[in-house]
Image (cartoon, rainbow, N blue to C red):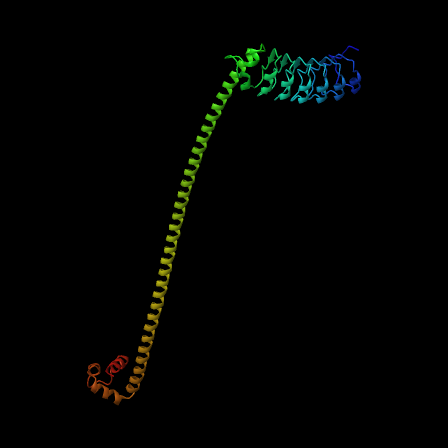
Length: 330
């Protein structure tokens, strides 16, 4: 069998027995729904062309590196994020297309493909390419468009005429858009970095301003809190002083009340004592008045009684008054 074309179908897998077709020269599996291919394909030692583009491959087996007769390998338009380093052992390979995948890097071993004339890496996510690709002495076309490159390896420019890499000097066509894209992306990245620095500086400024504002706010709040505490302390002190004053006033009023009561008690006691003395004197006077002869004797001694009871009168007209006069005379 010379060739097998299973392209543009809905295949989701490839039978491992396919690896037993050791005389197969061409194998086309493009335009299917393959997510992987069996490692047994590495046994197709006579294979010259292998087409796997337009599938959903996320990886390819490293055993493909044993296809020593392979000259053309199409792996474009898949979902590859990497390719095995063993592909650098494809000594007869002249065309390799890896366009339209999700590659972030390519192995440096591809620099050993000394017979490679066409290398397609367009539309991936490459940020750099290995300097070893500069050793591809037979390379005639290198497509790096649509990646995220900001520069090409410095080694490619060593010894080259201005504006041309060593690859271009040897006749390799590096698409002009690759160089423009690298330059534009470098400028874009520099501008983005500058914008990031400005944004960071602005954010830092705003952060410091926010911290200063917050600090000032805390200071104002602390001052306000101290003021409130001072006002509360003053009010408490005033209340305490008022309470103390009121307590002193109450104590003074109570003391005055006690003093007034004591004075009133003493006055009553004095009055009671005077009353008792008067009563005693009145009793004594009454005793004396009970005897007319004694009263006459008092009359002789007391001018007031004589005025109250003149000579020739039977007795004093006001007996009680006479008693009080006698008491005073006593």
